[in-house]
Image (cartoon, rainbow, N blue to C red; front, side, top):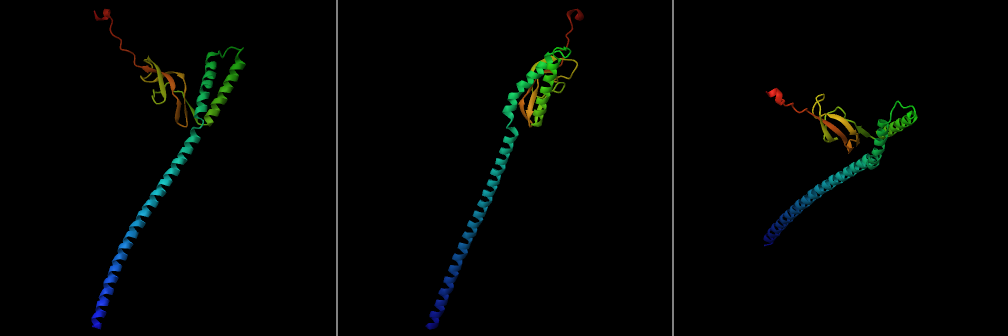
Length: 187
């Protein structure tokens, strides 16, 4: 009987060991799944953090790049006035020559300074009309240039670091209207 008890005890011990082994295996599997989930979550958090950091860097870069936008826009009418003053004054008039030279130097200094800060002039005379940079103020028939070309610039446009501040205001060419035969020619 003692041998039966020993066998029963051994069977119980083996069953208990197998059961504990199964429980441990199940627990290891659960822990491995939790570890994989935590690893995935850590990767996602790291990717999100990298995206936030990249977006913040882009925002700072844009802020630096376009910080002068409002200030530059406020200066454009001054440049326009200086250019108009030069256009309207007679370069041959000796009485205003010193004043003209002063205006020319002031305008050149203004333009050089703005260029240093990536403010670019859009002066499209003779170029094809570009609706993203030009604003058509009028259309005029012309046989001398291609239709849809800029004939005249009323006001220059400007862009800062490639971003449009103000479109150029222009007159655009159109094809001349076909000449209809007169009544005398039809007869």
